[in-house]
Image 1 (cartoon, helix red, strand yellow):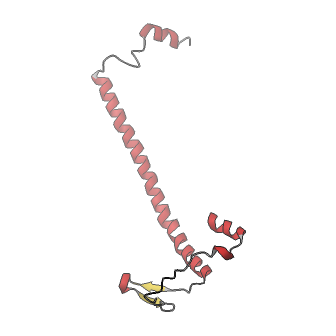
Image 2 (tube, one colour):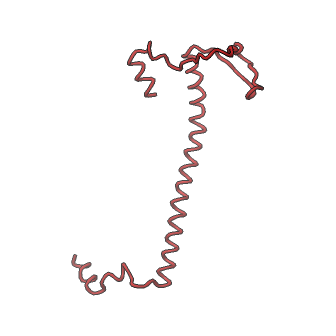
Image 3 (cartoon, helix red, strand yellow):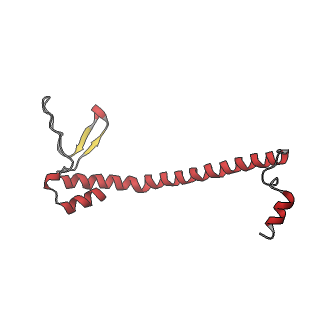
Length: 126
């Protein structure tokens, strides 16, 4: 209070909020805003790139092995298909079951009727 009070009494608040803007203050504001934008946008880009690489190199294998073990837990056989869409060819595993045109049954992912509550909490939290 001893240093700030007399300074404000002598100069007022014009050193914080000038009545008119000079060329120097305008240039300083422009340079500051451009530098701030460059730093803030650049740092978020770096974080996004790091997260993307982590997702590819860590999340990819986890999803691959997780899907494999989830299918084994459901009792589905090991399969390996090559191709896409109607050109897909099964290399390993039993052939696909052909559904009848009138068959509308769908397979459930999890049978909640026969799941114990403790196992359900583990499934939902993982």
